[in-house]
Image 1 (cartoon, rainbow, N blue to C red):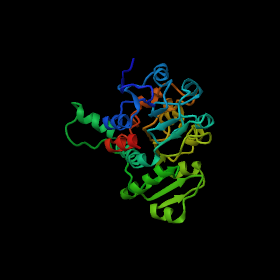
Image 2 (cartoon, helix red, strand yellow; image 1 turned 30 degrees about the vertical axis):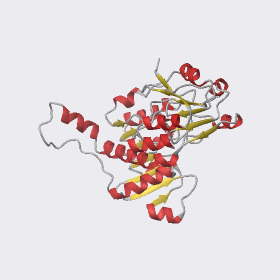
Image 3 (cartoon, helix red, strand yellow; image 1 turned 90 degrees about the horizontal axis):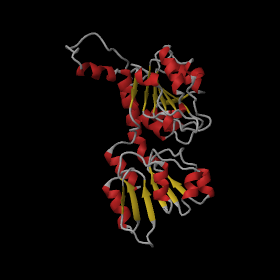
Image 4 (cartoon, rainbow, N blue to C red; image 1 turned 60 degrees about the horizontal axis):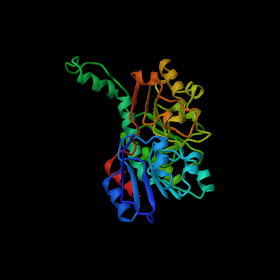
Length: 321
């Protein structure tokens, strides 16, 4: 069973459950406010039963990326007043049901935007320049100095696509301009105003199909909803420009991972990098339980374990928010 720390109990204290190992400062802020705090001290999440046991009489939950909120949780926690999400997207939380039950749900979108955009560009550079293979070669006994091998693709002169021009999409565009792409195209249901488009050099395009056909590098930055679930699928990928590098920084289930594996196997796309995965979208009952094996074994993939906001200063700010 995952361990937990308990602040001293008193019947009049309001109870807060912190579901992940947080910074000591976060714990100190909560306890100094006179709150009864129970915190998960492990890197691993509590089981659902452990969570319900700790939170059944809680007034507040500080939730993290591996958490979700559904009817079972709300039924088991009748005193709950607020779920403070230490994350950007809260699609794993049934906000409609929370509203009906009078439970507030908060998130911290502004704090994660910059680090997430940096991670997106890191993945694009690493994938295009074949850094996974290059690192392996250097660590192996096969490296004997420069050879005419491991040639990759850069951002300079490329056509970059951004699927979803929200805060993260715009932050990527702002940062990637320094790498001198030829064009930055975007698709979003809400067009950017003229001043923003001009400043970020972002050109609107009609739809995702056109974006796939024109781009060398495509960043997936759209939120997960009914219209974007598996929007990157077998049909859409069949229209991709030869050599497309696909970068997913949004939600795993915006992509059909099996279809991406098929596209890689048949050379419809040249590479796939992601910080997010379908199995993480807990709110979806039919999600895969693991990452597609063919993606993990394919040489033209690069992955990080949901590290978009994993910057010490950022994580501290998120918890304090």
